Image (tube, rainbow, N blue to C red; front, top):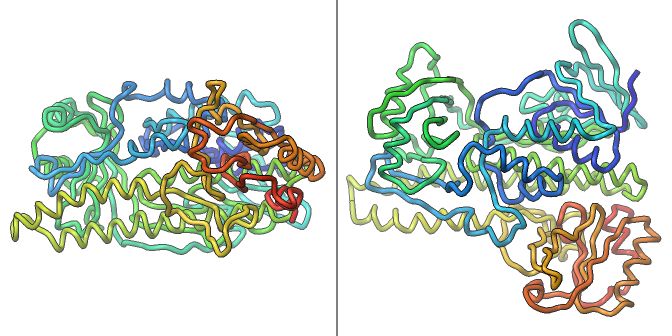
Length: 526
């Protein structure tokens, strides 16, 4: 019987990222993945600023950017058109460009299989991390002290014993099913097609008409808010396409090239590489933990590939859970720390699923019902122009926070939410915004693997209060001192306590009355 600290079921990007998080913190783990190779379906391409911050702290951000298939500097945003891509009405909203300054890394775009290569290479270099590719997890069992996962390959079975199990095994998660976690959400009862194709002609048609962008979305009034959209794989000829199709559609009974032409609004030759189908629905697990077993990524939440929320949220799951598991093994993570994973992550994706995805589909459908250039051209053009501003606003109000977390000193009555605003001010429960230090280095370059106290222009006694409290709670604490000047005044506070995933857990201008209570709370020891 093999014994490790954590068994990870599922070796997609979320599972491998979790293995990297744990391995870098000295936690032994075994990853089980039925696939031996990597697929070539270009999903999960849209990587947010926050995701690139994770890769920075994993030490692989340069390798990741070097693996992109589009040239450096090529615009990542989207074009949104009315009816088809040959329409006179289109938006080229700034979108995520508007939030660049609030993150340490810029966003990027590349196929998931390219990202997985980089992650797997990093995982393979970490001692204490073992990957079993080609193996399948069949049963998951647990008691009060241990878990046991039975894995099989070519008729051979083996039992892996671990302190914890994490299911990162996708929307049809065996782990989730066996521990009995139901899912809730919205089923739109729509069959969608995914087409991967190559066409130099299509690329040239876009190049003549539009500024450089990576995705192109057609809002057709007949679709009631559902999207037809094209995405670039590279710059030249590689594309993918998603759209709703009749429920009886198969690979052999439908004119897919004609569908592409209708969405584009012009004719072009295309070489098909893949045609597949998926169901349009959003689903969120009712909880992310049962005993010693957790779920993350698509096992916990799944949705259509709208807006790049799925993969990025899955990687945030891995980071959130990773440091908390490591803290537990290190002995300073208290009894409320691991349960806070569900408390923090589930509310975020529940709102993402319903407010940012399902509601967007409903809003688009309502817009198309209400406005039409055929009925009232002037009215439509006014509404269409206003809509571009609304699209930029959506990018700015997605700002997840953990204000309501039991391991954060948030304001009374606060809740964890995906809705917010991007500001420089240091707010408890929110992501730390990067700023330059007087040394010329960025605050993010000084953050430690444990907690970090940013102390700007405060006396030694205030800092010592936290140092002593952290020592008593056995919580690792890094101190960053500097003047309270220049861009650092934008934080609007002199002391900021930051946890390992760069979220702020406490802030103030002077030392608190009981620094020990704060350190115990944020470590889950309260």
